[in-house]
Image 1: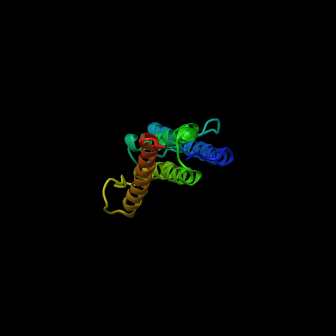
Image 2: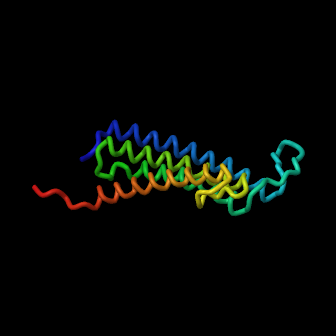
Image 3: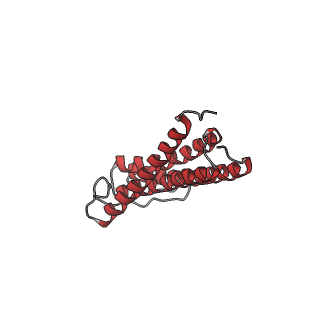
Length: 162
């Protein structure tokens, strides 16, 4: 099955818009990464600085920054290849929803690791911020695996015989 160009165009526009917003989130988290590295909050050209070391680790801040950038770019890449994926408009919408959810959930789960101790989200345990990160990662990963599996199945299944 293929999709109508107008329906696909709206889906692709939605992907590009969300990709841009997720990229912006990655850029903002990049300022947090910068402030962590500097050990102070400094907003040039505003004079002065706030001598405040942000919590977290260099790895956590780097991941929070990169998750936003990579997921935003991923949405743009998916928007570019979407016309080549042989799925119905309904399935294209479902895959898009899964990828948009993943693109938002993963950067915000990563920022929890940077801001709160013991909140990496790798296992289901206290504190509350770790539970939150765990569920955000879990939902984002499961939905994206489902979407990628559906894309692979749609593109690699044998062509129907006539």
